[in-house]
Image (cartoon, rainbow, N blue to C red; front, top):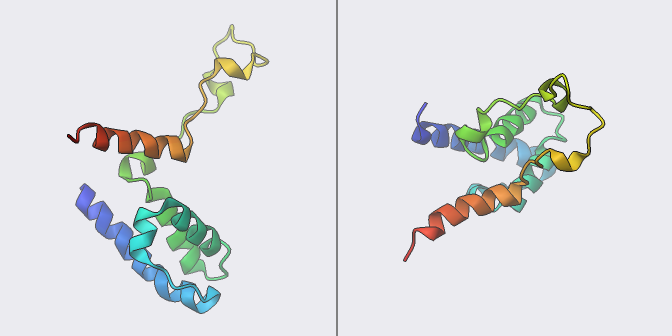
Length: 120
């Protein structure tokens, strides 16, 4: 599935969320703001995941998984630290030895740096 098709599918699910969010929570979903404002998107998704409507829950889970794009959504989760440990590795080793996974803000900063670094 191409990037344009993925974007269309994400937009389709966002549009499907508009009416259930308004009915259950009285929230008017601004799709444009949702796509460009990560804190607004997080707030909407957190509210949608509290829904009693199974369809809205399904839509919210789909959108949350694909919010950062198909490459992130379709990447398998890394195995737990216990599975990665070799035979000579102590499980009580300090956590500083393991690299910390980047936060959402760090990922967003990396993406923005890629695009702004090429501007003149």
